[in-house]
Length: 340
Image (cartoon, rainbow, N blue to C red; front, side, top):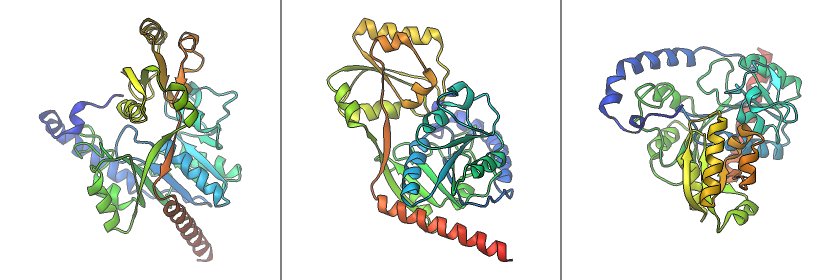
C-alpha cells in the first residue's frame, strides 16, 4: 500500500481515526507482550516501528556480512511478504520467483540462506536444520512468535516516524513506548535530525544508536553518470530512492513511484518502456523491484538498469562490538537456562 499523506502530520483526518488507533494499538500491544519460543541459537531481529520501509533488507545483509566475519553461520528468516508459499521453505533463486517467496527474500537469497515461513516458529526450525548459529529476522519485530535476543530498529533520518500515531491514524505498528523499551539498537539511515528524539530515548534505556547510509556500486554509478534517467520504484519510500540517485550526482529526468511490493502489470511496463523510448531516458529501479519484475524485454531494450546499494555504517566497529556482546549474552542465557 501507499501510505496516506496525513501520516506525516497531525491533521484532522488523523485525529478522526484516533479511536480506531487506540483499539489497534491495544491489540498490537497485547500481542507484543505474549511470550515467544526461544530457539537454541540467538535471534536478532531487524525491524521498524512503522509501516513501510526504511532499509531493513540492506541492514539485514550488512549484519549477515559482519556475523560471518565473527565466524557465525547466519540464516535469514522472513515472512515472505507478497509470496504465495506458506513455507517453511528455503529460498532457491534458481527455481523460485518473487510471486512464490516475495521480492526481498529472493533478492537476499543470492547472498545468504533465506527461509520463508508464515509460521515463524516453523521457519526457525528449518533454519536450525540448515546449521544456523544465529537467526536473523528480516521484519517481525511486533510478532511474538519468537523471543528476540536483540532488536535493531531501522529508521530514516529525515522522515522518522511521521506524526507518531498508531495505525490507522499514523504509521506506527504499535504504541511507541512499548516498542522503544524492546529496542536494543536504533539504526538511523541517512542525514537529518528527525530521529534524534528516538535516539535519545534509546540511549536513555541503555540501547545503542548507530548511523548508516546507502552506498551504491561504483560501476553502476559510472554507467549511469551523464545519462537522463527514468527512475521508478515500488518500495516503502520511493522518494528516498529518487533522492539517493540525485545525491549521487545522477540526473533523474522523470520519476514514477508505485506502492510497496507493487506487482507491475503488462500495461505499466509497456508505459514505462514507451516513455523511456520517447524521451530518450534510461529506466532505472531498485534491486527489489528488479526481483519482482523478472524478465521484461521492453524495458531491457531501453537499457533497464538496477541500482544496487549496500548499507555502510559510520562506525562499523561499534556495530561489530554490539553484535559480539549480544551474541555472548544470548548464549549465556541459554546455558544458564539449561542448568536450571
